[in-house]
Length: 241
Ligand code: URA
Image 1 (cartoon, protein in one colour):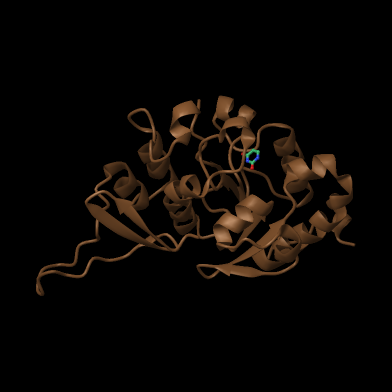
Image 2 (spheres, rainbow, N blue to C red; image 1 turned 60 degrees about the vertical axis):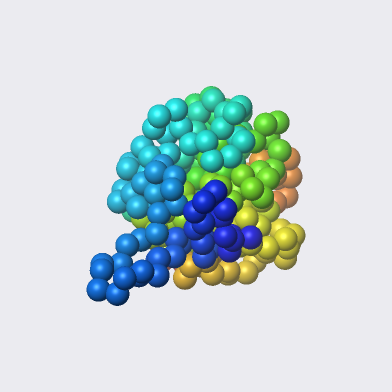
């Protein structure tokens, strides 16, 4: 799903799971230039040296308009957390609360995610970064369309390149399918360690699902312990059973 040629009008860039390929040097002897997309916001974003620079590139001048989600969004929700995070959590896209506030997972599902992080001995300030497949709210909280995910994925890839987490956790089917480029159902994706660009990826239930289905909480906690294990972080004593 991520391995696509993006048609940028006259220019084309190849996204090899998100990495802009190096241009063939046209003249041997000249320094090799990184191919540009013709979209200065995208170019600046994918070459940002910090998360702050990346966010600035995405939101400047009225904000990114690479897909139709720009039309109805209120705020762009780039991400939040520790720039040196060991674990990056990826959701599908901002909901109504996130769109209003500009931060990921701030509604009821987000409050549950914060409780899970606390039980792990972590927080948005310490060890964790939270973001989404798409940075703008899909109207009516529908799943992001493939072209919306594709337009936004270079930003997520740069976030991952800058943070270099030890492990990624996809929250729910939509995040997992888009990141891993598969149509497999969640039950097939959960309980395995996938690899994305050399980084281990676990898939767990979306916290909004857990609010409706509390029976999913114990298996989710098993996933969280596995995340901690992969990241080389301790499982807090009182939960280490
Ligand atoms: N659900 C998501 O997938 N992401 C958010 O940021 C909020 C709710």
